[in-house]
Each structure stands twice: as C-alpha cells, then as structure tokens.
Length: 172
Image (cartoon, rainbow, N blue to C red):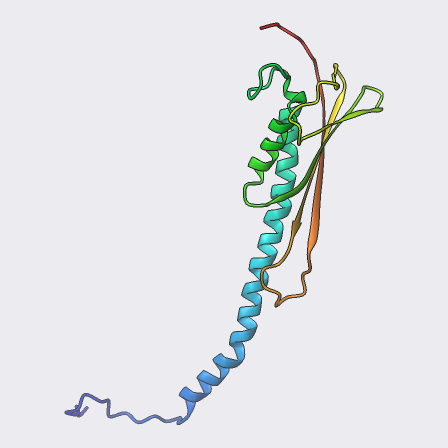
C-alpha cells in the first residue's frame, strides 16, 4: 500500500454523509435518553423517601418502647421523653425533612390514653405499664425536582407500633 506524505489515509469514504447521519440519530435519541435518566433518578429519590420514612418510624418506636431512663433527661423514662423520640426519628431520616411525628399511647385493652407532645419535650401525665402500646406515626412529602415525567407530589406516612414487655423501676 502506498503511503501518502500528508499523513491521510488513501482510502476514500464509501458512504458519504454517514457522519452527519450519526449526529442526527444521536440528536433524536438524546431527549429520550435524558427523560429516561431523569425518570430513574426521580423514582430512586421517591423510593429513598419511602424507605427513610419507614425506618424513622421504626427507630422512633423502638426507642420509645425501650425500658429505662432517658439519656437526654434522666428524670424521664424513654417512653416519656418526646423530644428524644422525635430526635431519633429525625436522625434516622437524615436526608428527608419530616413534616409530622405523632406519638400515641394505648393501654393493654387498646384504649387510647394520650399523646406525647414532641414540642414540649416530655409529658409527665402519661405513664405506661406492661402490655401497653406505643404508636409512632411519621409523615414526609416527596416532590420531584425535575418535572419531565408525570410524577406529582406524594405524601408518605409510616405507622409503627410496639408493646411494652415489662416496666421495672430499678431506682437510681
């Protein structure tokens, strides 16, 4: 084969215009690919929000049903330390902003006995016994960042319940 002095290949393009055709095909396919990529990212964000709301509810009810005095304020029990229960839920859902956290208590027969007010820190009027139930409800909303796909705002609510197995005061 004869080499050319200017460094170009001696072979000629057998199909003129194929380079322009590839650019046009890419320009047609790019928007579809971008919509698919954004859709996958938004669905992933929605699933993460759902999972974090569920985990926040479970972690908060696990802390609330634990036997013992609160780490934050030793004068309160863990079930009575509403600010700590709310803090556990908020810490568990570290990426998602929780819109509401509700902590309810029920006796052994299933009768509602009160709500722990998470804004005041503690509710000394509520006392629990063995076989009582604590219920934590956590709510957060998901809103898509990019509105290329038809996913609207969704509110996720998770409810977790746990029974107090035994309450024993061992003193200080």
